[in-house]
Image 1 (spheres, rainbow, N blue to C red):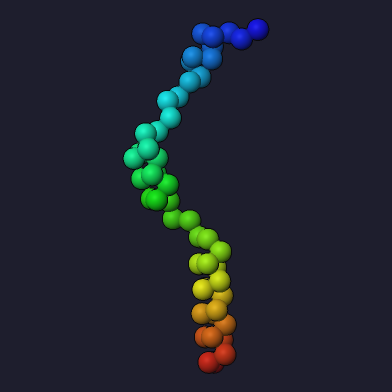
Image 2 (cartoon, rainbow, N blue to C red):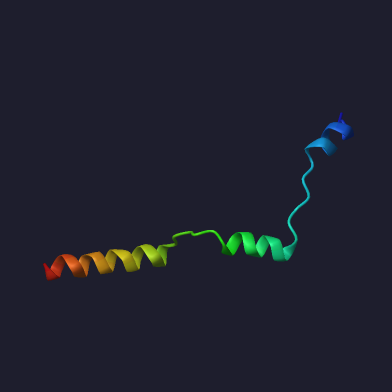
Length: 49
């Protein structure tokens, strides 16, 4: 059986859309495109040497 009092203690309200958007965009995440650009750049630098 669900203990509603215990569940309410665990509850954390979700972020508002603007706050969630800001939290997401402020994270410095590397995606596949960033990795590919880095690999190409490193490859070109290695060929030049």
